[in-house]
Length: 98
Image (cartoon, rainbow, N blue to C red; front, side):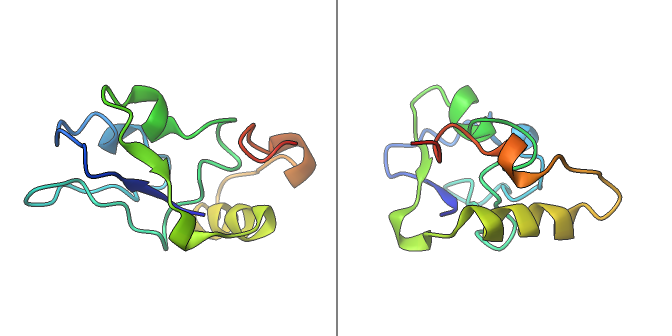
């Protein structure tokens, strides 16, 4: 599932430079997250980078955009063709681990 920015946002922009996929962009009233570019930081971090820096905890998983680990990993690989990623089993973010 892609991340999204919840209603209680403050439009501060702290999340934008943290996204490894450049999925977050400045909007008129909110920084929207493009779900086609969001890989939930799979392959980069073991957490949502946007969520880690959000001062009001407004960057959240979007239950309307549920996607498999493999789909998110494949997206990261597609978005960064010049990057060598560790195998999926070594890069699974903590929010996927059971």
